[in-house]
Length: 233
Image (cartoon, rainbow, N blue to C red; front, side):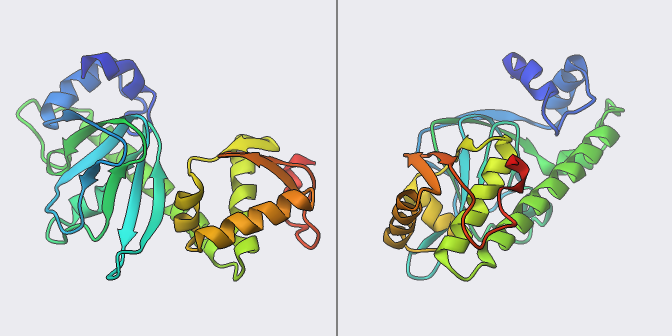
């Protein structure tokens, strides 16, 4: 883990904590680093879990599977972000979702229980870490709220444009890259893949956007969607 100290120092989780302090904390938190190949499960639905994960490289997908085996992507976890913290906090409630590697990924796990237990070293950094953890959880709640906003649109077109507009805003540019392929995007937006691809083709033909795989560029604002893309004016 020593090789990741500089990286960890710049994450929200360890914000304001020095590399030397982080090195000490990693021992207190019983951390471990594991590598996962693309598509490999990190946490499965129903498994006991009291560890919080942080992505060190690659990205991770949070996925919900229903009774019939249909999957919906809840969230994409980028390097520096954490996952499974809610279930680690409520240890009696096993995860009701799957966590899998969206790409080859390195993940650090640390024992959630150790964060709230003062160790023999009485690390003074624990208070800062708890503050940062709560901040990270708040950020994730905002992200989930944004997804609800996308899904509140009743049409595939509305959901797609809402999501793409948000990604454009995040990138600060009309050109941007999304973290999903077509199937993953369809799962995230809770729509049929074929219908999604058809809507993307329509938007291209209308001259509203251009795209190649997961790279998009807005060319003009869609008619009737005056609230979108105002950030690009």
